[in-house]
Image 1 (cartoon, each protein chain N blue to C red):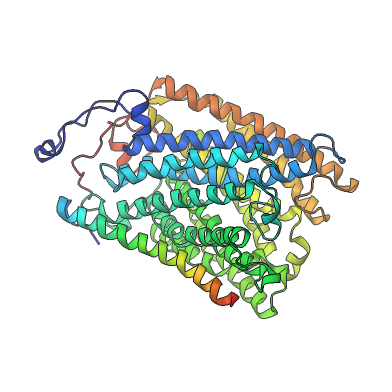
Image 2 (tube, rainbow over the protein chains, first blue to last red; image 1 turned 180 degrees about the horizontal axis):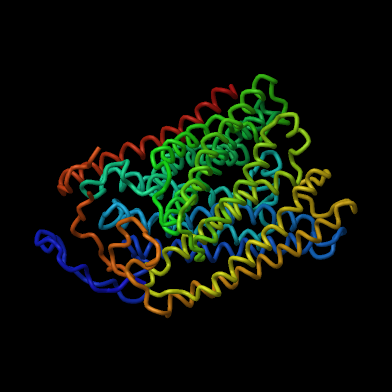
Length: 535
Length: 42
C-alpha cells in the first residue's frame, strides 16, 4: 500500500546507519515486516478476516434462533458457536483492528519514523494467525470447540475434552500478543514524539491508545494467570477453583472479571479516540474541551478497575459489596457523559458535512449512548437480579460493541483509507453500507432488549414460544447486517487496488488536524525520518 | 512536558528502560495474581 520511494530530505546522519531501500519483494515483505504501515495493514486484514469468520458463526446462531425448536444444529454445537463467536470477535476482530489502527496512525500522529520496537511488533502480529488457527482447529477435534462460554467459567470449561488445552494455549498467545503490542505503544508514545509535541498536544487517538495500552499491560496478565490456573487445575492436580479440593469457582469469576471489565474499556477507549478525531474534522471546529476529554478518558480507565463484580451480582456477594460495585459502576457514566456532551458540543454551530466517516461517528454517538443507558440499568443491583443472564445483557453489550466499537473501526477505515492507499473510495457505496448497517443493526439488537425483559435467558439454542416473534425479527436483522458487511469488504479491497487519486489532505472540505495530513497519500514507506517541528 | 530532541543514544536508552519497566510490571501482575490465588486457597 505504501509507495516504495523514501522520504526526501532525510538528514545526512541517517545515511550512515543503513542503506535506504524500498520494501522487500513478495512474501518476505509481509512475513518479516518491521514497517509499522505494513504491520498495521496485516492487523487490519487479519481483523477483517476474523470479523467474517465470527460473523458467520453469528449467522449460524441467528439461523437456529429464527424459529423455536431445534432445526439446524446440535445444541452442543450451538453452544460452541456462541463461545467461539465471542472469542473470535473480541480477540480476533475488535482488538486486532484497534492495534492495526494504532500501528498505522500512532507513529504518523506523533511524528515518529516507526514504532519503538519494530521486531517485537512483527512477532506480536504473527502470533495471532497461529493462535487463531489453533482455536479454529478445535472445531475438528473430538468433543468439538469450547462450548462453555467465552468467560470459561469452571467447572464447565474443564469438561470439554481435547479443545481445552488448545483454547488455553490460544488465549495465552493472544494475551502475549496484546501485552507486547501494548508495551510497544507505551514505549513509542513516551519516547518517540516529535520535538514540541507535549503530552497535552497529542491527538486524542494517541491519548486514548496510551491509556488503553496501560490497561492492557495491567489486565492481560490477569487473564493469563486465570487460564494458567484453569490449566493446572485440569492437568496438574491443583484446586484453585474446585470446591472438592478446597478451592472456589467464584474466585475464577472474580479474577476473570478483574480482567474482563477493563477489557471492555480496552475495546472502547480507542473508539472514543477515533470519534474525537473524526467529529472535529467534519464539523470544521476544534474538539470541544480537549483537556476534559483526556481527564475523562483517564477517569474511565481508573474506574474500570473497581467495578468488576457488576458482572457477578447474583453470585452470592454480601450486600455491602453489591452496593459498592453498583455505585462505582454508576459513577463511570459521569466521565462518559462528559465525552458524549463534548462530542455534541463540538458539532454545535459547526459546519457539518456527512461523509461516511462522519455518518458512522454520529451513529456511534447515538447508538453507543443507547448501549450506555442499558448499562446503567444493569448497574442497579435489584434490577440486575432480573436482567442477569438474559438477552437484556446481550442487547446491552452488542449495542456498545457493534454500533460502538465496530462502527468506530469502520469510521476510522473510511477516514484514513484514502491516506493509506492513495485512492478515494466510492462514497455512494460507502453511504449505502452505512445506512444498511445502521438500520439492520437496530433491527438485530433492539428487540433483544424486549426478549431479555420478557425473561429469555442467554446462551440457549431453543426457547419458549412466547419469545418467537422478536427472535424472528432479530434474526432477519442479523442476516441483513451480515450481508451488508460484504459491501464493506468490497469497498476496502477495491480501494486498495484502484480508485480516484486522493489528495494529501483528503478531506479538503474539512480541516483535519494532525501530522498524518502533512504527508502524501499514500505516505512514503519510511516517513518522518527527520522529526517534524511541532508548534 | 516537551520531549527532548531525538538524540539517538538517549532515545535508545529511554526505549530500553521503558520496555524493561513495562515487562516487569506485566510479569509482576501475572505472578502476583497466581500467588494471591495460592494464598487464598491454602
